[in-house]
Length: 275
Ligand SMILES: NC(=O)CC[C@H](N)C(=O)O
Image (cartoon, rainbow, N blue to C red; front, side, top):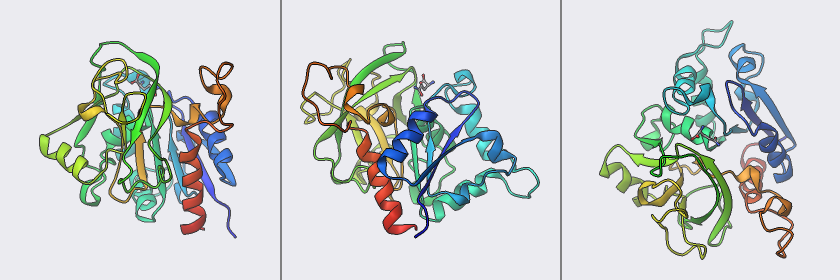
């Protein structure tokens, strides 16, 4: 059987690439390659050779122009050296080939600013939502309770019963739609996979600090209608082992951190459908 291969893109100010690659391997991917964006633009590394694309957190271009905005333009317009191909064509082919993309924090900001999410009607290049400055006006760094929509088509969250607990760390995480219709459609199609909630994972909340940014409808993460493309503001790769939990020395916790399930589901999907 062919190998299951994950790629993590780094460069221009990303971080967490080692954690993301580690999470992919722990989740069951045979290989997880960390590639600098320059290696992709030079044509040395091609997205076509992978099944799972990870866009990590960070401070792309120093958050100038708004987080991930410059990189979104770069990825939409840059050509791959030595070819007639634009990088965005590789990107769209990756999506058409039925592969998986996970954007975390700065990676989620990148996906929405490119227009990849929510990807209505298979249009992955029209921006309809954004992530902007937290209502509190400051960078926030805390742990959040995330209620999961069990009716969502999301590939990554299958098997999660009520919710997961993950850390967030961002200044621009407030989810906003361009119109009430966009928000209605996201809700109606169950694309709002994760919502900030109370610790019981029952009620989504607009109350600070459980909702750390004031996101519309408490939305923390969304997927597209295929469920294969997902982005979220909190960091699943930062909680894959119990020792990463803030109270691990005081509480009896399972070996696996709550974020690992997303990578396990991705690996299983790739094994069943793509290799
Ligand atoms: N952790 C992150 O990826 C931060 C994202 C972005 N730089 C922000 O502050 O909103």
